[in-house]
Length: 382
Image (cartoon, rainbow, N blue to C red):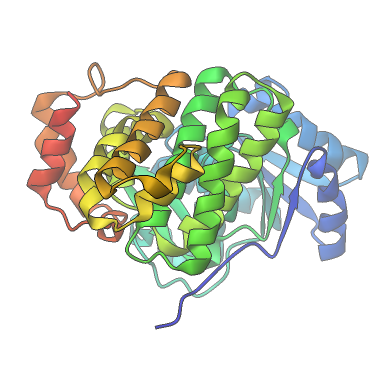
């Protein structure tokens, strides 16, 4: 069996990387940008950093800001219409996962109008054409949507999120500039950082993991563990480390998938609008304990990457506990809640479990599971 790796055509990393946008746009002959960014980023001047680059270079653009925290089918359909009305020929997505996911769906449907209902994109859709070209500029250090072939849309009518996986949707250019992330509040920094750690750990243990993605994921775990506390404290070193760590995690998991932490988090986000990173962070230690007996010796490497000493001399039981404990300690240090109390309700557990089991990330979980076992995991955190 062949293992596939799909990455951006080009990516720029480091302070001031957004300045490279103008040269890339001109070299590719693009004429007008459709800038997708959420209202808060526009209000607080974050989006303006990129618009200033476009203005200075005399590049045309239209701004689209109907971006929701969990983008819905209706948001996407509105975005498709606005893209066509704008006369743009490429997209610049500025923001976190929500802006990126909206941009990807708009780009895919604009190039493949037979999927205009949006729901037909769930799973691995048979699109024929590459997305409208996307330049992705993340403002959070967590989702890595700028380097993945995935996006997530909320079906508000059915109270569920669905994952779309499509090699045609990957942004052609990623601009990973820590300056674009410096205005993130502590809570969002913590949540998105734990989302990135979840990507790295789930990607490292998923059924499809192999040597190249293991390399990405272990390095990502190391970088994230070393820098998340600093990023929450808003140190330049912490911000820059997280910008790189979350991207490296995306290089891996985009190509091998995730597991039931994400499946369960998607269900919580659809029902309660729970921030995705918070949901992942709460669920991760519990699911790691559940999956431990299906992960071989991988928790030894996770523990070591997170800075635990003496892992070579530990028994299997000891290093598995050490890995879980290291995740719990990091989550506690950055202010993540320890359980789902006040978030989820017992009466919703059957629906949550069914939704999580049906989620596209579930088959990649290292341990085969069931609706009943997922329900038990939810209940253990209530």
